[in-house]
Amino acid sequence: MANIETLNSTAAGIDAVAPRLGEGPSGAKPRPALSSRNIILYGTLGVAALYYLLPLYVMVVTSLKGMPEIRLGNIFSPPMEITFEPWVKAWAEACTGLNCDGLSRGFWNSVRITVPSVIISIAIASVNGYALANWRFKGSELFFSILIIGAFIPYQVMIYPIVIILREIGIYGTLTGLVIVHSIFGMPILTLLFRNYFVSLPEELFKAARVDGAGFWQIFLKIMLPMSLPIFVVAMILQVTGIWNDFLFGVVFTRPDTYPMTVQLNNIVNSVQGVKEYNVNMAATILTGLVPLIVYFVSGRLFVRGIAAGAVKG
Image (cartoon, rainbow, N blue to C red; front, side, top):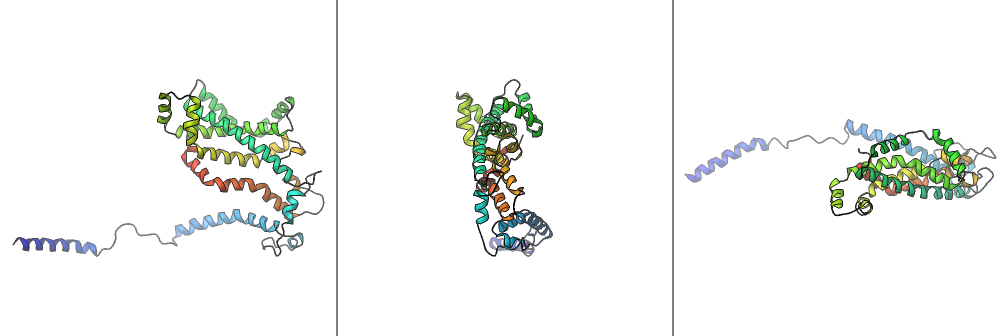
């Protein structure tokens, strides 16, 4: 009897489950690959990519053509005969005013401007942000507010007073003066980034180090810096891009022999002497923009990590 009852209960269980087994899998239906949502999404991304890549394509193919081929008028066609002569001329032979040494001199001027400006501004701003986040002092909020206000004051308002100051101390028209200007103007926004990043780090690490007797510089160098690579990459990309692409400060605070690359590019493109060489202009433009592009490609992933880890929080 016990066996018969067991069989009956098993059969009843199977009968109860059987209808559900025929119903198929439950849950949301998978989205088709060609849904209207995906078409709109990828279509928009494709149009945006085309919008930005098409000018770059035109610049590259034009820089690889000779002038006779350019005069045919088809700017989208690939070069029938590739030539690198425009690149050589843009780098070493194109005239920028009285000088005909191309962009090479401006490139090294830009390097001498960018490297110390980036190092100085990031070094000072990181310490400022660390102090404002972890070592609050009397008047720290006022100091921080002044820095933030300084980040949004138009540069044009302060150009003339800075020219007078640099002239009085004897460094107007020199690379040193321009380095100081870039370092000062980059400090407010970088201080904001570093301060917000350090605030997002666990406060317990700072308190534990303080209990163990660590001081200001020990905590900063041994605890905060090893955890701050993403925000340092963010700051480096912002500064390198801003300083390398700067034209206004370069043309105001330097002289022809110390012009940065962007100013010399402007002189090449806007030259009214001789035949307009579009291939040389395109090659010069690409050469000028190579450094920021390389920085983005090399450290782009760390840039995203820095933003996601608190670079714009607070």
